[in-house]
Amino acid sequence: MMDGNETKSNTVPVVDFGPFLDGKGEDKQRVAKEIDNAFKTVGFVCLVNYGIKQEEVDKCFEWSRRFFDLPMESKMLAPHPPTAAHHRGYSGVGLEKASHSDFDEKPHEELRQTPDVKESYEIGNEEDEMQPNIWIPEEVLPGFRDFMNAFFGSCTSLTGSILHSLALALSLEPTRLSAAQSRALYQLRLLHYPSVPASLLRSGAATRIGAHADFGTLTLLFQDGVGGLEIERREGPDGARTGEFVGVPAVPGGVLVNVGDLMERWSNGRWKSTVHRVGLPPTAGGEGGDEVVRDRYSIPFFSTADPETVIECLPGCSSEEDPPKYEPVTAWGYINMRMQALYS
Ligand SMILES: O=C(O)CCC(=O)C(=O)O
Ligand SMILES: [Fe+2]
Image (cartoon, rainbow, N blue to C red; front, side, top):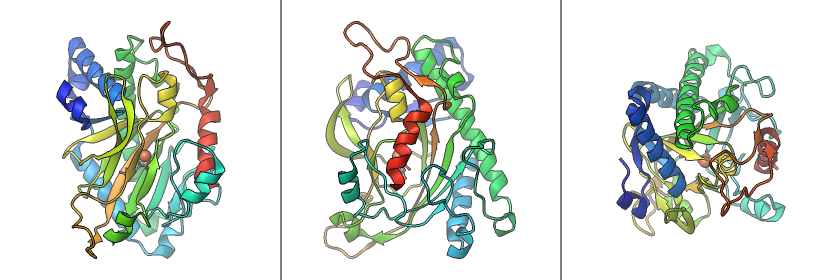
């Protein structure tokens, strides 16, 4: 449950999603308000009882481990294409560099000097003809593809339920937001951050994932217990930015959900897309030690609106004092512009 104190100290509010999935009208309304509040002030919420069994999440982490444990030549049977436009398959350490939400070439070039020590595997909707999946051959990891497709379905369904709750918070038709994401052109990402000397992360010579905001509407983020995720602290009822980062420890049985830039835009800034990064876990030893930080796995699931959707201020998100701040843009035009910045 969220309360005022938690918001002030800016830990990510923990919300029990069970009553939204199974409860009556007033339960749904209460949960919707809690999520609305978390997105207004922090930009992140941690859901428990969210309808995907922990067993299924654990299995996904196991498959991820098995995938990344494969020899390089096997992983390279499903290589990420050299272009940003087709974002599927395996990327080795140092290939992708997260960037902040500006598109200025110069700072981005400088940012690229600091490598992200991570490898990733991107999976999309099997129906997505624009970006077909790039699987490793079935015999290399039998069952992997079926499992990932099923997990993709579970995450899609959870995303739909969260969108229903957000529509409720705005007093809109329950399907007002989910209908704009009906094609589920989403992205499931397996991430592995190999172990790395703590000194490199501490000095900034390397990062795990640099500070960035997500592009889409909502991201689900499953973390293991290693730690190191940090989000920019926001304060006050309008979630003002502070430029300071705070750690977000994993909550057992919880999934993080965060707002992306497209959703911030759609909601006219009501829901905040908060900058986050992964660095040195708080448990890493003291200054100057030569210890190695153990490897870390995480599983983000990125959702976005259907490409042709025009993203313009949602009903209930503007007023006379707070008129629409952004030009209408199609989801496709917006995401494309952001993807170019990643691999350029
Ligand atoms: O690994 C994490 O916990 C965060 C990953 C992330 O922010 C991303 O892939 O966009
Ligand atoms: Fe992210």
